[in-house]
Length: 244
Image 1 (cartoon, rainbow, N blue to C red):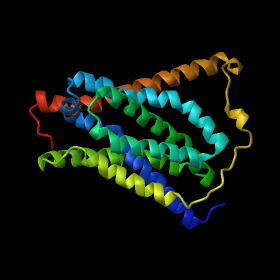
Image 2: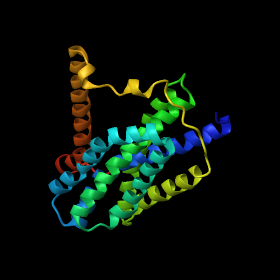
Image 3: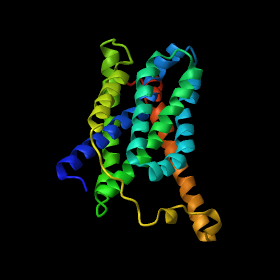
Image 4: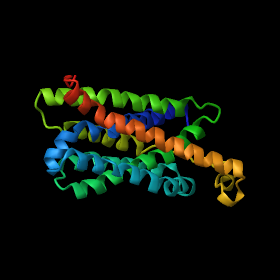
């Protein structure tokens, strides 16, 4: 059982990670023109390249979730933080969009690693409250709110677009160092095997519910990503709106 002060420190670090994750969700789409110029490809190809984050997320979720149960939350959390750190540091310097595609897949893996470790940590810190887990979404939204403003002013001041990546990397590195000395024991669920739901044990109703929720999750995320990716470009080109 960790002390209250240590618990607050752990929660602050985890929330900061998700603030940076909020930046990571939009930082590629907010810099599409810069990447189009840097990679020497049209916007449509930039959009295709950015979609690689989904491949990283979906391919790593189950594996990293299993690792989180077997080897502990902290190693998986560190894997996610390190992956995001590499993504933030390297992406602005990549000139080949094929390499960028691989790096963006790594960002998707980082997202899965954060989810696979952070949500269980919050549940193990306070099993009676779901508020910390819900607050993650609010912190992500803060990151998504701050980044577009920062991107606009970086452009207005004619600074290098990669400065936002470097700021995110610096904060993440500090988080990495702050987490090093912290030791917290992983509390297992009463029976981990009960959480490994097998398809052959599902009723027809459960299987239908699983497919429905998967379809809803995919559709809602796809619509949101598509909207946030193109709305600012549409507003600028078709509605003559300024960046601000």
